[in-house]
Amino acid sequence: MLEKCPVCGWKPITGSICPNCNSDLAPVLRALEEPRLRYQEGVHALEQGRLDEAVEILSSALAEDPRLVEARVALGQVYSRKGWPREAISQYDTALELDPSRAEVRRSRDEALEALRRAEAEERRPAARPRWLVVALPSVAFAAGLAVMALVRPAPPPASTSPPPAAAPVVTPAPALSAPQPQGVPYTLRRGDSLWKVARRAYGQAALWPRIQQSNPQLQQPHALRVGEQILLYPVTIAPQAIK
Image (tube, rainbow, N blue to C red):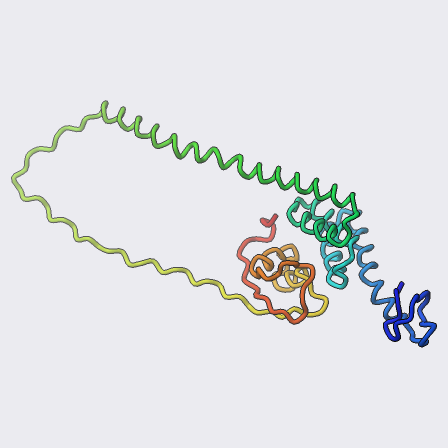
């Protein structure tokens, strides 16, 4: 429902015809309703467990209406189920900026933050063992070498009257050539674009959209792209199934 007529400013508007200027407001109402219809479709995909499809649909809805709080909350839920707590927290933070009264969103954010802390702790835990081995293994190897040297004493070489062999010439290796850096292909964002759509067209895998954001630091809000902005698309050398 419109708050006021976009043609003459009359309010309130209770139907599809302005009572003041008789303008047909049905096209405007349909345009406003489209993001909400996409949101409902994305929620249905989430309930069916089709998480990748839900991300694409909800991202498309937010590209049309970045202030649609419900779509941001649903997208945060999808990210949490996919095991992406950092992306989920970003969506919950934006939703709370738009509507700070949503206590359930704050609880969901706290859960995602706790999941992120657990994941970071898991990443740090196995890294402590190699550092311990780096310190311990050289000492063990040195002690073993001393024991072997004590048991095996080679006989001294016989004296020789022949002159020592000439030293081999020192060959300086040629400097290694650095691999050429991949060049990014410029791409201009169009209306209705999302990073998911661009990744699917460029790489054949919509789930590779975080690579585009990493290569373009100016994309602070990947779900609120500016039409006409130019980004760079770099080649992806990692298999899509290895991306988490």
